[in-house]
Amino acid sequence: MNADIPSRRLVLRGALAAACGLSLPLLLSGCDSKPGASSPPSGAAPPSAAAPPAQMKAKQSGVQYQLTPKGEQKCSNCRHFAAASNTCALVEGQISPEAWCIIWAKLA
Ligand code: SF4
Image (cartoon, rainbow, N blue to C red; front, side):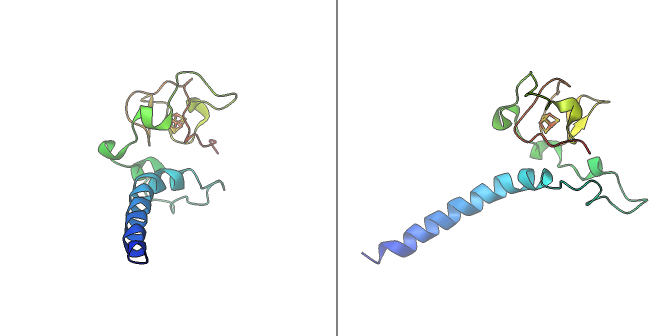
């Protein structure tokens, strides 16, 4: 009976590691609630330069992207939105200013 425990632990550890590896960067990017708390020193690259490469961005379907706002929350007031290009630092593809997704974070 106890012989099963190590293998279950390994499976659970593997699943946890995989889940954290996929979701933690996205979650952490929205955790900074203090304006300017993670601001780079003057002269450093702007925050958008720290955005993940395009191949690392989340798929729209993976973040419940929708073309309508959720209450007051919409891409145009999200910290990850780039209005000049209608793109998002974290979600791939063209992004509507009136859209929304689950990793919305208030624009400081
Ligand atoms: S709401 Fe989602 S898709 Fe829209 S800008 Fe923010 S993170 Fe990107």
